Amino acid sequence: MGCKIDVRAYYEWRETPFGGGGVDRIDVVLNRSQVRIRLGWWGRFPYRRAGSRSNESVSVASLLPSDEFLQTFKLRQGCNVKRRYRFILQFKNQLIPGGTETRATRTIYYPSSGGWTRDTLIDLGNVVDHFILPSKP
View 1 (tube, rainbow, N blue to C red):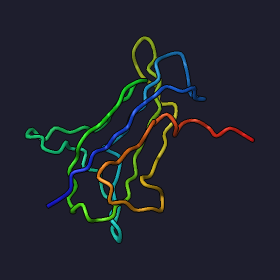
View 2: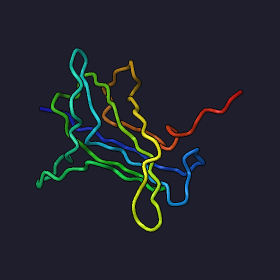
View 3: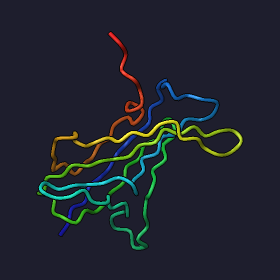
C-alpha cells in the first residue's frame, strides 16, 4: 500500500528584499517539512526517495536561479487519503568566499493552510514568490 507523490519546485529569479552580495539560493527543507492526513497529526515528511534501493534521502533541495526540483516520494497511506503538506523554505545568500547566510524562512502549506488534497503532484511553483512582499496599492 502507500502512495507515490511527486514534489515539484522551481526558482525563476525575481528581485526580492533579501538580495545581497552573493548568489541567491532557496532551500526546500524536506527533513523539517511535514504531512498530515484528515483527522490525523502532523508527521515527518518522508524525504527518502521512492524506489531507492540504498534508502537515499533528500533532506534539502537547493535551488539556484533557473533550477527545477522534481522528485518522487512514497507516503504510507493510500492515494485516496486527503492530505495537507507543510513545507519549510529558506532564502539563502551564498557569500563569496564560501559560507551561506539565511536571510528568511517561510512555512508554506499545500494546497492551503485549511485545505485538503488527493493530488499526487505537489507543485510548489516558483519558490521565490513566497519571499516577495506584496506591493502596496
